[in-house]
Length: 187
Image (cartoon, rainbow, N blue to C red; front, side, top):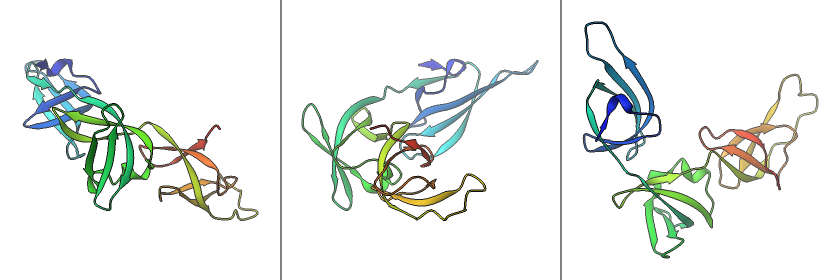
């Protein structure tokens, strides 16, 4: 058990039969009332972000999330197939649970899978990934009054905006939080 007053961002908790990771914590203490602890959290099963409110001194169960490195093998149209790098066991995760993550992972790459008591919660993406551009619009001459950008398609199928000097076949860094161009990848 952990006291809600001690919660910090990144802590995983179990509350009302759900598993949450803490994003933000705010404490509100007035003179004659007990402290109110508001926790902005992400449900690790559904991906929804919600606010939880506790009274100071309440206790919640701390959840121990396991991370296991696995290789993304392929998708069969309905499931994504991952292989444990140590035991070679294969794991299937429904594609609808990984719609955002599939924009950043390609076959034969290693990813971290989060597990809670044997239940698969999802894929943990790195902050940035390097992906190759498969299609890019041509730059329009004279279109440089501001930081001009053009459309590009990555090897995973994700559409992003890139600066005019980026061309087809180049490898770029993309942030996994918002799917935006971050810079050229170092070779």
